[in-house]
Amino acid sequence: MASLRDIRTRIASVQNTQQVTRAMKMVAAAKLRRAQERIFATRPYAYKLRDVTQHLRGHVDPSQHPLFAAREVTKALVIVVTGDRGLAGPFNANAIKTAEQTLRERYAHLPAGAVQIYALGRKGAEYFAKRGYAMAGQQVGVMDKLDVPIADAVVGEAVRGFEAGEWDEVVLVYNEFKNTISQNRIVEPLLPIPTERFLTPVMESAEAGAPEPTKSEAGVDYLFEPGPEAILNALVPQFLTYQLWRALLESVASENGARMVAMDNATNNSDDLLKALRLSYNQARQAAITTELNEIVSGANALADA
Image 1 (spheres, rainbow, N blue to C red):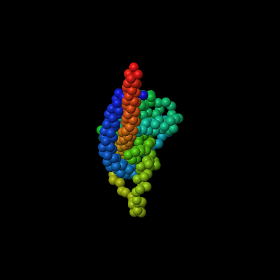
Image 2 (image 1 turned 135 degrees about the vertical axis):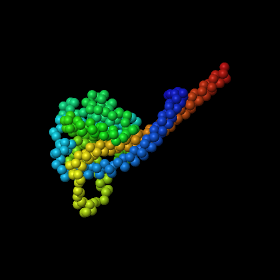
Image 3 (image 1 turned 30 degrees about the vertical axis):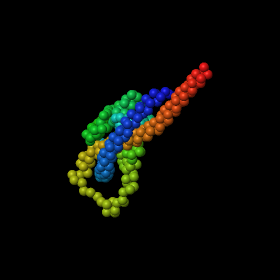
Image 4 (image 1 turned 90 degrees about the vertical axis):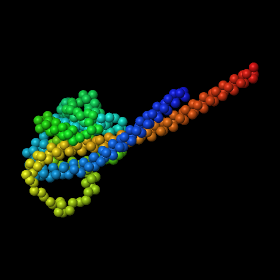
């Protein structure tokens, strides 16, 4: 059995850790509220921008636009969104596992080095770099200070490489925010822009809960000025940037939700551990007192016999 001093030291250590986890839970909860506000404000615009792009695509010849042209996939780019820090439960591991599963299943036929990784977030960048994956680029230390130019820069590199033939396909892997305690693992095609509408589970839920369009709304058509081609050319870069921007916000909200849950679980577990340690401490104390009493009684009996 551990000594009383050892148990007291461990109790103090667990109490200090509990203070840290409780504080981290409160910080994550505050960040989650802000992240939820941003993602709930961003989603409607991102969804509508996707719908407008698909609508415009129906009025032009998609084969004439370089970002719509599908090719035989011999090289690919996978953009993986993770966090910059740990202590968020399975959040980072889920994104990394989804990316590796995509590499195994989607690109198993390609030779080594044909698929490159662009890591957004320190955890993903460190993981893939250490394991020798071909890295196209990385952005670390940016998740706490996200802004649209970050998404615009990454999309710019993806578009440049796609147009130059460095890769024939670009996919995006991230965690979609479902609620505080759960996230959806998403593998979203980015380039070429898919023919069919891509819907995540949250998008499907939003569409299922939306009212059915009226006949007049369903049959409405639009006049485009200066023309659908010109509008589409101007809209596509914004569409791609905003889809990545939405994915980054989804990931940040998911990370803070996962960290809040993980720290709450750690705080509760430390309560259970403290109860067990205090019980062990009391048992050790009782055993020590009993031993001392036995020694005193034995000594007194020995003196009496003498």
